[in-house]
Image (tube, rainbow, N blue to C red; front, top):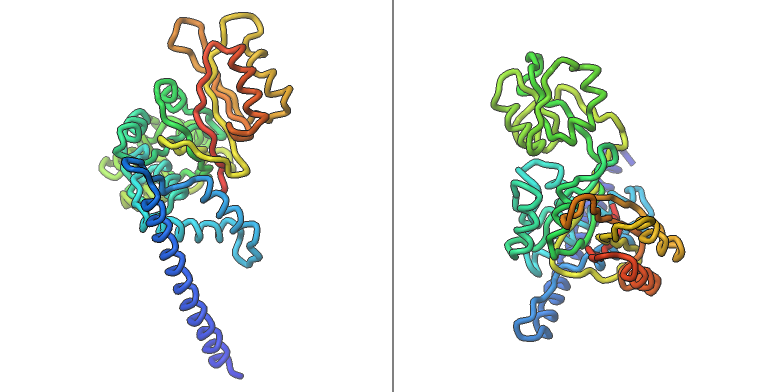
Length: 363
């Protein structure tokens, strides 16, 4: 058999497989439509029907990765299924997701990574605006940054939870790569725009290569790219999406100080998420102003053998030198051992607020 004959045979196999895959995807989409019909059929009058189930999607994606045998990597296969699920969900009910904009931010990338490309992404000016958009019902869900592996917590997000009744429905971990973007390579760079967090994540690189160039913090990396596209001798630190959107050249790639630079984002919404089998819970705890207050808050977790994944402290709004603790830990609010801890916390805390239980980031 000649090379041409072997290639023709393989291409025919690919064409046959493509046809079978396409048929199966459409069959899956038909099932999704029937799911929506059943939910609407049995819904009570004036009941808001929930079409998006974070715990269900997390379970599906975990099974996809568990049964994957290659040659595609587990995460690559899961991303393909995420897009199929996104398109199928859009047949049930198109979702609107508010995110910290403008277009081209890492937060938008996180929204697409979590929900797929079939959602309507609605750009917001600030983190409080994302909360308000979801609370008002104008958006089904919101995506906000919560912490970066280099620069730490995003305080605006934590503070927004103090006054909000929204729940955390999910989380997204996004590997962040920063590029120095310019309108034209070879131009003289007199100032560099970026978000304050991104400037911090690239501090050592900037100190080495542009120590005397002015660094200007703006509201987002996308805004930095927009300015760099319009101003002479200006550069921006942003990602590939912003570079494409504002037609900028990559002067230097991957300039983040840490190669594992990752930002964690939270999905916020009005619904409570049921257990998925591998969950996290977030609480806001106000301690009484007395000796050993933090110990009293943390002791129940230690006694129950529950692993804390993060604890942050923020000033309370009830008076000077009072603080609240934001605590993330493994497990779901409805788990029996978690319920016991919650009861003990109520006995020692001045106030306790459950922010949500949600599936751990799958991808």
